[in-house]
Image (cartoon, rainbow, N blue to C red):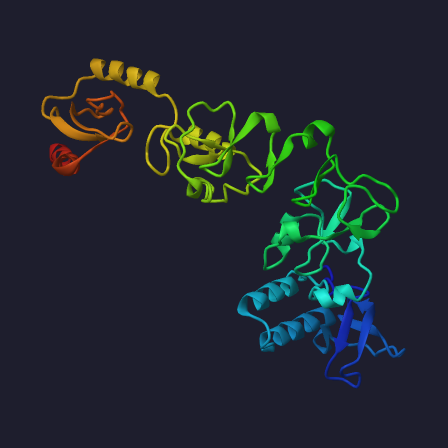
Length: 380
């Protein structure tokens, strides 16, 4: 039978409990698999006698537990701040030391900041500098990285200082390092405090719109600003319908994310409702209707013609054939039409994007129930 794996691997920092070394801190230096005992090199220079597993506890776990209790007792923090601090502590599981609480803006201002202070890597942009937000003073790669790690949103226009990644020089906002001369980005907007150091053709696919107040993705010549919608629209979109500013200060009907400030371009569907271009592609593969108004989002005339041919070759059984009232989601007219299992066309525009109305809608449900009952009787 194989010896059990040690609970505390070599060099694990531990606290000794319940022995003559009670409360002493040290690191595991030796493990005896046959006796399942540990020898600990204590921080005070002593070497312990063999200790059983229940006479040791992980210092990292003890520190984390103490930190969580301290956070819970802190009356100066809000519930949201406590939750975020506790999440940081818990993310240091699997024997790793708990993450320290990020330093305050005051503490950061009292020491020299470095680009190495930035947490993780940026998945949003490529640039050769990091920003120092005025709100918290903690350096981040970009505004989106800041908002992902903090419990508050950055004021992108208020940023006054940056740090060069190459030489770690702290300086006012610009697109070239005052110390080493490196250019921070192929694209730079001094208003939005935005840099993009990707290839020239990719960085060129951005422009700043003074009326929107932010930078947009795409070439400037491909977009025009609609003053009524307060949003840039594709210059090639000839059927743009103005719905007012509130239309774009809302969420995408598919992903429920912001439309106005999104890095993903938005387009206007045939019904006029805006949607992310990527979400439109996904929606069109699953449905032909707008999630908000149920109007057709694309030209369905060919599909309607195919359905008419199919209906002509598969007439309804006489006992189910009837004329019903339907509401058309496309032209918003109510008309009479011959019911069919494939669909009932609108009497005004011919669309099959319809639904039975009033008593006919109730009769449809009853007919379905009756059909199920009759089928069961025949089986008996």
